Length: 238
Image (cartoon, rainbow, N blue to C red):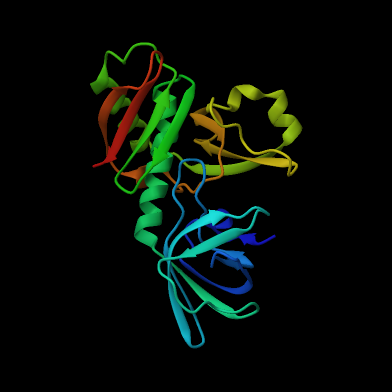
């Protein structure tokens, strides 16, 4: 398995690696994955890689069938061969915006404490779908509560539990449509706040900011009807 640098340090913007293989489709698999692969509503990272005599722009990253991260080139070109040393450079501004929006969506699930049926993350905005029969009456109150949490400058940390511990405590899973991946023996948890000040704890494999104040001010967007008992709530980076 590749080392998941995006998980170990989401603020890392460049890193060396070695090419493990090139897929039949022209994807590149490295032994150290700086690029986050598409998953959990968060898009894959973009950027570029360089090697002796070559450079290639990376449009996105996806999960391969064996768990590796596969880099998808922006356009056809000469690929680095297996065993070649490369340098990875992340499109940091895009990644950081994803981190801000993703963390803000965790807080939105605190302000609206209902089961989540779906979600998506972008560079300017994000959204969660809630199992909600009627739209919320106090739209401005939701926006204010969300920004108050952000302004508390809460720490965002991670911890791990076993698959068995997760199955024994299903209440920490907020997403109805997708269960956290199990089978590897452990599941990653993202915690916002500490001790008595903890406001959220849920399984998540994405990238997040280190403190909520880094998100910046959030503006509430549309609240849309997406079914008999499904409401889509959007947020925007202000």
